[in-house]
Image 1 (cartoon, rainbow, N blue to C red):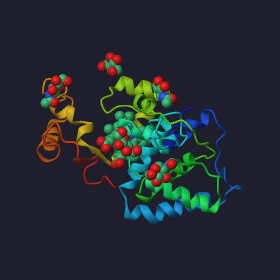
Image 2 (image 1 turned 180 degrees about the vertical axis):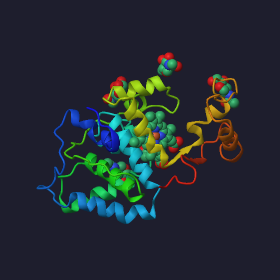
Image 3 (image 1 turned 90 degrees about the vertical axis):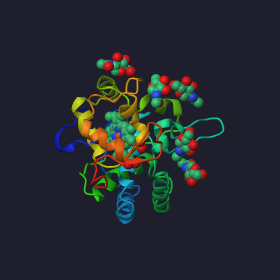
Length: 247
Ligand code: HEM
Ligand SMILES: *[C@@H]1O[C@H](CO)[C@@H](O)[C@H](O)[C@H]1NC(C)=O
Ligand SMILES: *[C@@H]1O[C@H](CO)[C@@H](O)[C@H](O)[C@H]1NC(C)=O
Ligand SMILES: *[C@@H]1O[C@H](CO)[C@@H](O)[C@H](O)[C@H]1NC(C)=O
Ligand SMILES: *[C@@H]1O[C@H](CO)[C@@H](O)[C@H](O)[C@H]1NC(C)=O
Ligand SMILES: CC(=O)N[C@H]1CO[C@H](CO)[C@@H](O)[C@@H]1O
């Protein structure tokens, strides 16, 4: 299944549609207010916390890339299971509380009807809209998964060090082509990254204390001087798109 042009971000919403019957307005009869409640909640809170839009969009992506968009990214670890949340790429996910609160609002209206997976998919879409991003239609009817496995998350979510061919393979495994990869990577026009996610490209690209030669020299120098001052910085955040990372 391929989606092109203005519907770029729709692909994420459709990832799980291969195995399930999703449709627009799945809850029109069972919980007619669901989508409005989500939109209102997001519209009320995202303007006060605009960086949350990026967090929700990324959480939706991570959810979808492990076992489909099934909400399993939200599941907590237990004494006997390390959940997706515990995997390294998830250590920088934020917004779990936001989704939990949203779920409570929807539960109050219609107990046990609307899946967490749909709530996350809709909230990510609506939050991007609130900060001035594109709109895409989100078919609903996802069912929540019960399995959440940190080692799967580690192997399924592309690493910041992944090269182009492994990114293409990872996307192809989910029915997404090179154009989808490029377009969806455009999500990085919002949000932030921790220095540690990419500092090897500044300080130790091949293990010899070198810099990635494909990185723009001016940008790299600027990052080293003003942001990621040494190879061990684990806390500094860098704006993905300096000057407009919230919009
Ligand atoms: C193509 C493979 C991808 C890789 C390797 C990748 C990797 C990353 C990394 C390393 C970060 C920074 C994490 C941190 O240091 O805090 C990040 C952030 C982010 N990613 Fe991706 N990503 C990919 C695709 C996507 C896609 C498809 C989406 C959504 C459509 C997405 C949405 C985001 C967003 C919104 C942020 C900012 C999060 C925030 O500000 O809290 N990414 N990504
Ligand atoms: C996960 O744990 C947090 C903190 O204890 C709790 O607030 C949240 O409701 C839990 N989420 C789920 C999906 O069980
Ligand atoms: C999690 O997934 C890994 C890799 O697929 C597997 O070896 C492991 O048994 C799984 N863990 C659980 C608790 O299911
Ligand atoms: C890309 O990375 C994969 C996995 O690490 C590796 O097997 C492959 O050789 C790399 N390809 C290129 C062109 O560097
Ligand atoms: C650079 O990478 C090499 C090989 O992975 C490692 O042995 C070395 O300690 C790293 N240097 C720094 C400064 O992190
Ligand atoms: C939100 C969340 O569950 N974060 C976890 C990510 O992984 C680290 C390390 O495994 C945990 O300490 C965090 O609680």
